[in-house]
Image 1 (tube, helix red, strand yellow):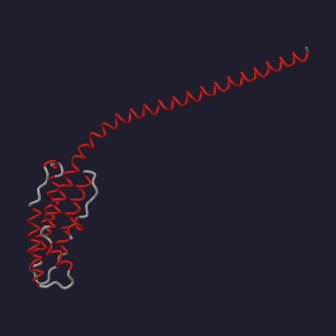
Image 2 (cartoon, helix red, strand yellow; image 1 turned 60 degrees about the horizontal axis):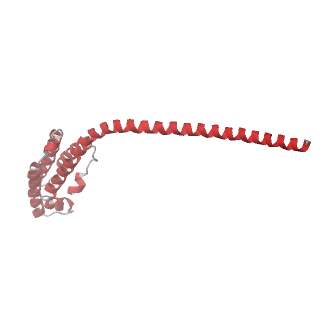
Image 3 (tube, rainbow, N blue to C red; image 1 turned 90 degrees about the vertical axis):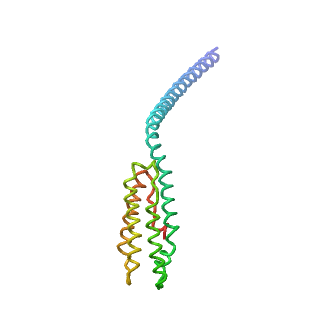
Amino acid sequence: MQVAANKLTYILIVTKGETKMKKFWLLASSITLALGLAACSDKEESKTEEKTSGETAKEEPAKETNLKKPMVNFYSELTTAINGADADLNAYEHEEKPTPEMKTKASESAAAVAEAVKGVQIPEELKDQKADLEAALKDLSDSYQAKSQELTKPAPSLDAASATFTQGVDKLGATFESVELLKPDLGKQVN
């Protein structure tokens, strides 16, 4: 009987220990689950807040995004206008020993580019940037006009015209940056 009582006591103790262990695991699991749910609900709230603030932020860039396409189209028209008329000027500028005939053609080419730049239309969507773009176009046109005039001289110096061109490119670049586009390198695309 004593042995049976000992076995019964042992079983009760083990069962009691297992019950305590089960309660401990149940409590630990509950705490972990509660923390997990709390963390997930915080993420959901922040996503909702991000969506709300993101929607507002998306409305503002939508206007800028709408400006990017007309700006790129404007730039494409500008480079096409310049490249369509500056072949002889580029040939002259890259020639080590240009001939007088090349110089005459380059002068005519520069005058044609100046007129072509004046003819570039600024899209209606860019009305807020119109003044800046007009200033850039004026500098670019003036630079080509100065090259044309300088090339009629016996010893032409295109430095002043190049400086005016650089001013125009800088103004154009600032306008591009105002609509969150990268500054274009007009000098590389038209030479």
